[in-house]
Amino acid sequence: MFASLDALHTELRACRLCAEAGHFIVSPPIFSGPAGARLMIVGQAPGRMEQERTHRPFSGPAGGRLFRWLAEAGWAEEDFRAANYMTAITKCYPGPHPSGRGDRVPGQEEQALCRPWLEQELALVQPQVVIPVGGLSIQRFLGKGARLVEVVGRAFVRPADDQRLTPWAQQHLPPRCQVIPLPHPSGASQWFNVPANQALLRQALAHVQAAGQV
Ligand code: SF4
Image 1 (spheres, rainbow, N blue to C red):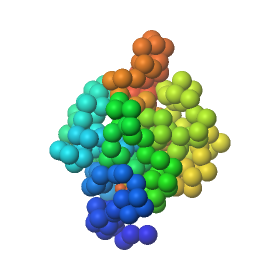
Image 2 (image 1 turned 90 degrees about the horizontal axis):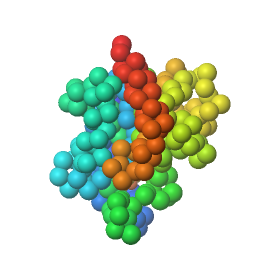
Image 3 (image 1 turned 30 degrees about the vertical axis):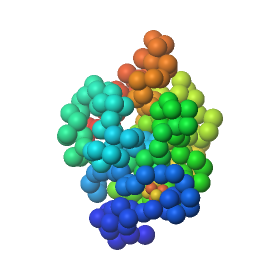
């Protein structure tokens, strides 16, 4: 356990575990936010833009869409970034997908190697709201069977909804923490073409807005 979030960040920035284990992954790890952040966004992994240029989470095209959603929930981008924590299931760029479409999904071993970092982030930040973004992150908190249509639009509150949270989430989320899932803000997603799914997204953003009010 690290003594402070700054100490964790110093070690995390130097992490090369995946490359040392032989995985194609591109440093540096990408994350941001202060200790004591009320909201924590947990994405899948950073993209090429974040890795090559900005070194800021969600600063590529998908991030643009995410921040348009968060604007609906009452957050200006820079205010959100300054006040809240942003991280990912794996924190280094996993490279392009072999098909050439989008980015590679981090494998199970990479996810396992990076899991202790997220556990430490949760322990040191103690967020009151966790927002898993995209299927991989949603599965970490709500299980592999979690379908977007069943979980987007809902807020899962500890401990009342513990039966819906994974054992890992129950172990590592702070008491009374809410989990508010969002779909991945990819422009390629077909999920948003269904009007009912748009309504679920609006419900989710209403939860984010309510949760962000102190
Ligand atoms: S993805 Fe996580 S575990 Fe892997 S090298 Fe990056 S920070 Fe380390």
